[in-house]
Image (cartoon, rainbow, N blue to C red; front, side):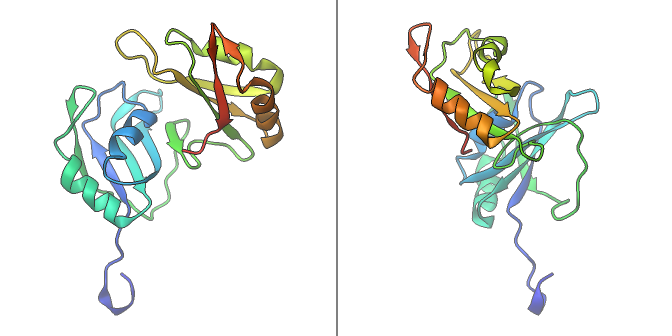
Length: 188
C-alpha cells in the first residue's frame, strides 16, 4: 500500500495456459498488442521444460490492465491464454536457467545481446554460432520454427560489449546465402 491507502498499481501480469513450445519472444510479441513490453519470461521447470505460464512486465500499469482486459481468452500458438495481475509482484524470484528476454532478459552480468535479422528461413543456431565464432559468442537462439521454417532472426549473446560491437562492425551487411543480414544491438 502506498501513502493515503492507495494501492500501488502493478505493471506485471501472469499469463497462463501457454503452449509448451511458446518462447519468451512469442509471448512478448503477442502481449505487445496491449502496450510496450519491457520484459517477457516463460517460466521453466528445473529440467528446462515450460511450466505453461509466464510473466510479462509492461512499461505502464495501463498496458498491464489493457492486457488483462483485452488479451484474456486470445489464441497464442493454438492455446487460449488467460491473463491476470501478477500476485507475486515485488517478491524476489530465484530462477535457474530460463527462457526469457527483453530489456535484461536472462542475461548474466556483462552479457550483451545482439539481434541478427534477415537470415534465411532454414538457418540453424549452429550456423549463426559458427558465423560469429571469432567474436566470443556465448549463446545463440534462432527465432522459433513455425510451419517448418524459422522466423528469420536470431539473438546472439556475447560476453562483453566490445565483443558485441566488433561482431556488429564485422557482420552487419554480411551476405548469408544471398541475403544481407542486419546485425545490431538487441533493443527489445
